[in-house]
Picture 1: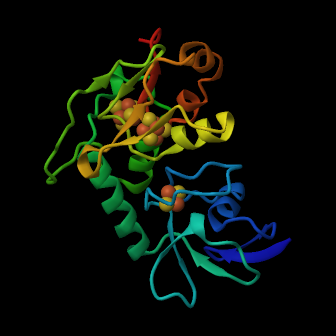
Picture 2 (picture 1 turned 45 degrees about the vertical axis):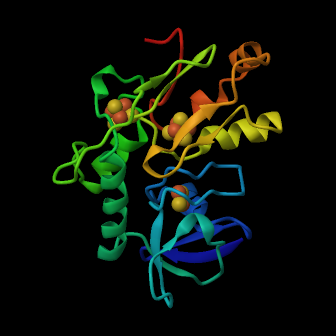
Picture 3 (picture 1 turned 90 degrees about the vertical axis):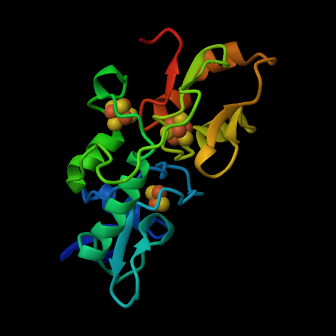
Length: 213
Ligand code: SF4
Ligand code: SF4
Ligand code: FES
């Protein structure tokens, strides 16, 4: 085990663990969306899990840094919070906030993060843009809510890990990026019905079983 210091407290972590995992395992919360416990290759796409490490010029994403003995880490500096709040506000500026009609209400990573960072769920001064269509109903057993999706990629990653080749992928680019299904011709209905790991891993309410409200 390695010993490192986070926010003035000594914690222990196994060699090879990422800093994010080490902190989360020690009940030190760092906002994150794209990290999946147990899957090593992180997309590092959400840009939320910043920390400051003594000796480093700028904040770094904690999901990409392996723990080292004697690291001195701060999770709560003004620079870290500024970056996290900016990333969260950008996500919310393209998000349809309608919590009371959302299956993720009260178990939603965005709600948790907004509360933790003291950022309002409504986008404030940033322009609010939403995508069309709001719901993709093309999959036989799942509906995809475009404007709830935070593009974390977790659904794609778990599908790939479980099936060897994913049934879902990202499509389009930039603001128009969405999660997309590879058609509905295969035996997706049966295989997806028995799996639904993508629904379970989604940190928001973007993937919903058709039978759900
Ligand atoms: S995904 Fe979260 S923040 Fe968005 S509407 Fe659902 S509960 Fe609210
Ligand atoms: S559907 Fe959910 S898990 Fe998939 S990219 Fe969107 S937010 Fe992430
Ligand atoms: S959890 Fe580190 S960039 Fe998303």
